[in-house]
Amino acid sequence: MENAPLKTSWRKIEDWLLANAPKIHSSLNKPAAVDSIDELKKLIGSELPLQLIELYEIHNGIESESIANLVYGMKFISIEDAINLVNNIDANSSPLKYADSQIKAGYTLHKKRFPIADDNGTCMLCIDLDPSELGKIGQIIFIDYDCNVAIKLADSLEDLFHNFQEDLYSEKYSFLAEALEDNNEWLNPIREIDPVNWFNSPTWAHIKV
Image (cartoon, rainbow, N blue to C red; front, side, top):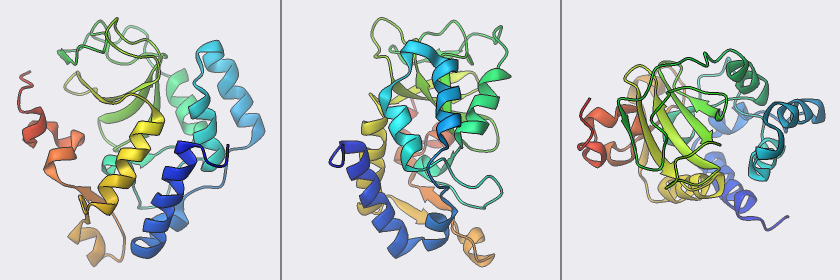
């Protein structure tokens, strides 16, 4: 397991953070407690991707009170906060106005869309456990639940964090100037890879809602 792709990507991510964003690195929580992982297993059941357990065994999100973010400029949330979000999801949420073909459009939020990151506003990154026939269980989707838009970003958690570390080293992230003025570090992705601002990104210019 030591050479598993997810751990390999995380080592490279942490090396980059230590060199360029030590405050973000220090805001990463320690691995999740066994009890929390057991609660996650009970919540999701047999559909639980092993990569999700591995992720939380690396870090249990980012400190909730810290001014720090991570992949796509979103905050990596702890297993406890994620479970709380899932337990409070409205099963009767409205259908999506736009969804990539790999994503079921009949609902926006659902217990089978497990959140791993959010923007503290109206967007989340989720592991999709109920994809369309064209999708893949465990795929990573972005959901703008204010606009009812869902975009597929990666086939798996491994792919998500592999892409993230490649984007970091390819200088596709900068630091938000306003945050630096306040002595904080806030990652700001370039427009082409910024799903939170999909409506201003050339990558998703085809989305009309």
